[in-house]
Image (tube, rainbow, N blue to C red; front, side, top):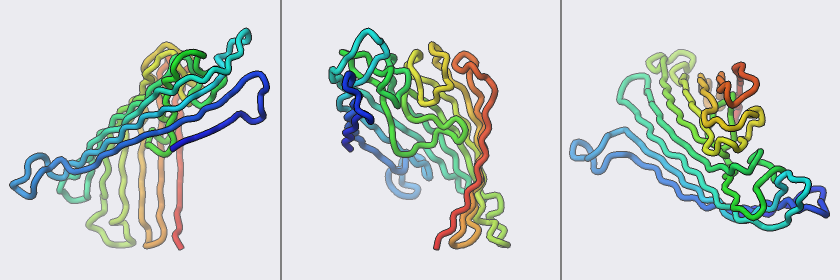
Length: 250
């Protein structure tokens, strides 16, 4: 992927360019070598992983009104996402997930999305800015930028043996998140994390239900509550999110 972006409207005194390139490699498989009883490893245990290197050049304003810099600095950032998914052979089709993700940050950056108050001129830009999708929670939901988190999740189908009104297709589950920022003094995508200097960001608990009501109608219900770390957020109260989605295929 190669991105070439310019500021709009144009600033005649200061350039705000962010020309990034992403290089990625991934792996997925089952932690079992061989078949049946002759296999070595753990049956029904799957692993996944992805590593991304971001390169390119950035030009931004470090927020110092006494200086104007149009020097191009190298982007040298990276991220990875690894995890395990276990499918026990039991009724209700349970599954358990353990995931860890990390994205580098740059202590010069006030916000990973902006080149204003960005990387200090003459230094490498170490702030990773991810795109695409990764589950970082439904309430906090930060971008994968100056972020690391652990996710523990589980799901099952409580009515698998029941066939009336297709409730056997209903799955319920929950996820627990714990968040940190690699660079304590750098910003994250959520500007409400306005107190720098603290590594820990907080925790979140999510609950979900997805239900294939019919062959072409799907229902998804999400609820999440995020508990901010008092040393990272001025506003300490918890945040809640509720989402209901109906998808009709035709």
